[in-house]
Length: 607
Image (spheres, rainbow, N blue to C red):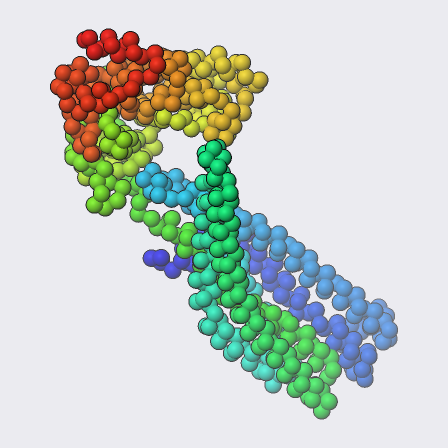
């Protein structure tokens, strides 16, 4: 943590200073009322029940207060009013604390969530989704814990201690010093236990994140787990992770309980000392019985804040453990940086398409392990270029550099001559439509899924995009048509239907650059024919990168680029590469065409 972590987090509280002022005012009112709480009983003991002393001037002016019974009645009313005021101030304080704590939590969570959205796909590929979800939701409560569980109690406790100690000093300075002496063992307990509590709180958060990640990963592939009869194995694995989480939780709790035991012992000894010394002083006539009662009552008001201050190291340790996990995200250097002085992207000429140039690009997900090496490739506006090669050759990685899902480690990717790193990410991605092998649909209506990239699009534009993608017919057969809710990850649709919705989404976006990542690999021949017709309309007049193995998509390319071990092995048209008898010809020879493509393939061989 480059800066003190609590300084960084407290910066999130500054926009809510008005709420903090209101909260502080409620705290002051509560402290004042709490200080008054034992006085009606003291006055009743000293002025009425014990040997009556001279009355209090302002009490004697109340109607009926001139008699002991009347004064006792007024003191009883005062006790109720003060207690009610304390409770009312506490209720308002709790309401404001809850509201403000939620605002602070979600302010920090929003920043962490935004940082995750800005991170590269390479980094996300190494993370566990469940753990990231915990960092956004559970760990961001460190902001609330710090302000409402640490900073506010410090202010409240210190003010309470000052008020109570001043009153106690006025009553009897010796007893006040005895009561304050308990702060020394409390400070020792803080020093001994603060470090272990921090580490064990961090470990607990780590184990909880691991458990959440395991649950998310397994529940996301339930069909695979069931198909391979791994239910018992995954259940046992989850149970073992749960046991590790329980052990970490118990270790964190044990360190806190040891700490609390030491603090409670110190306050118990202090209370006994006050009772012993104060009782002797009352018997000797140096203080009244009412004064002793006030002292004993104020001990709770004194030791309560002292215990709170001591226990704050526990809350501080818990907040610090969570904050470490949050700041690990905020301080990551992997996130794609925005340019300090953004460049403007020139208007495409001619037509909507744009040129893409890979200028000696190298890239690796880890240092010393390059996936792409010295790639030099230019895709002209409106050109269709197919990227082919064995699994792991770097096809998808190369295409992912175009929408800036990652930046090259060497060289540059340019759009119409402008380095993508000199353009804001949102500008780059507005120019690209990505059609993945497995279309990703969200749990919302079909219309909202199609308009996901253009949320302000009119319903007519959504319908037109669906018609162009060949999806309108099956959409209208659904119970609610375009308002039909799509299941999680499109589970309520077939593969072909989901792919056509993804094509409609790309059509509505109307981007000048299209990336097709094996969009028909999981489809049967009949469905592929319908989807390819929609893809033809999608890519017409646009710059297109096609990652594919099937000849149905490769044949439509103006140029085929063959990748081997992260390098360009050869490039050319389908016919040129077959005649060259190089890597493409070998891939072609081992290619097993899907049913329905044998005749077309034979025709191309004769060419």
